[in-house]
Length: 60
Image (cartoon, rainbow, N blue to C red; front, side, top):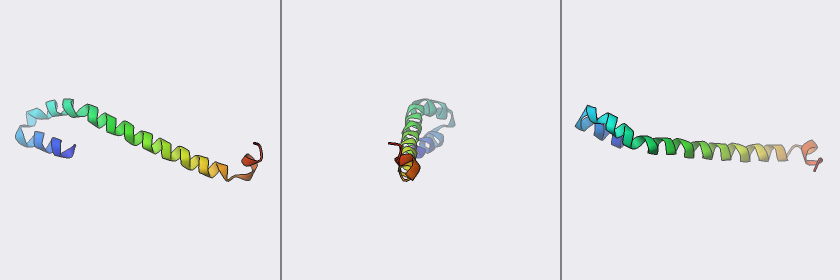
């Protein structure tokens, strides 16, 4: 992603707008993937911690 920005700015700064339009979907998808990974990890961590609390385990 950074290499694509660098190339767009080196050739012509006016092409940065066009490069942004082309790279925006990829950038957004990367953020969605990172958030999904973070949320999955946090959920698993929370599950692992809460599973160890005795008073929560005795209810089931």
